[in-house]
Length: 218
Image (cartoon, rainbow, N blue to C red; front, side, top):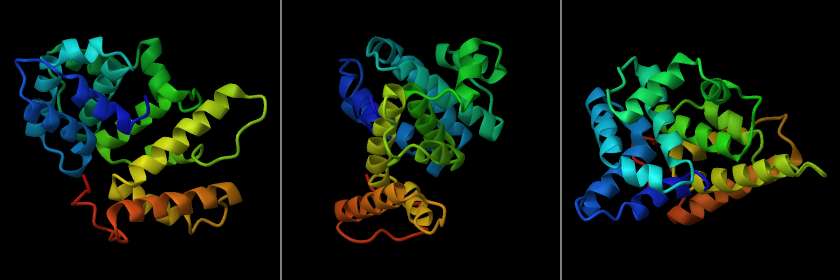
């Protein structure tokens, strides 16, 4: 599962007769775009819906339950909002307390694998903090490491997901454009950043307006 596909996956698999399709679509949109208009009310609603869809989230696999808890944890940290008493709220609180081995893994940027990339994306969608984009971009478009299968997998996942989200999120597109002005960028990553920007502009049909992050293409 690669980031954007995670949110699509959630919406596509929540085929529960007791839940309307529009409710599932709203939940998926809230996950993908929470950082654009955060509020305590929407945060509380997000937590309630996460617990409501718990069986589907946990049963679907693909680390969806982990990422939901991470998002709640990061939103709580960023805004000093209290996590709920539901299952995911309690898991988020455990992450924020940082005592467990998994909680330490989440904040350890030296431990990088495809799951960590998804955690960084979930953290970005929760907060809009570009630190998580920096973490991802250091691998996106980088030269594959010969003989290092783990790093090669991370590079492939980071490249795919960054380009996809560049076409979906204007803030990611702006970030990619700024990277093109970075003198220290390698030749491989410069080429990748140009391809990501071109992909986003082709998808929208016209150059996206830099600075306009309030309206995100859906």
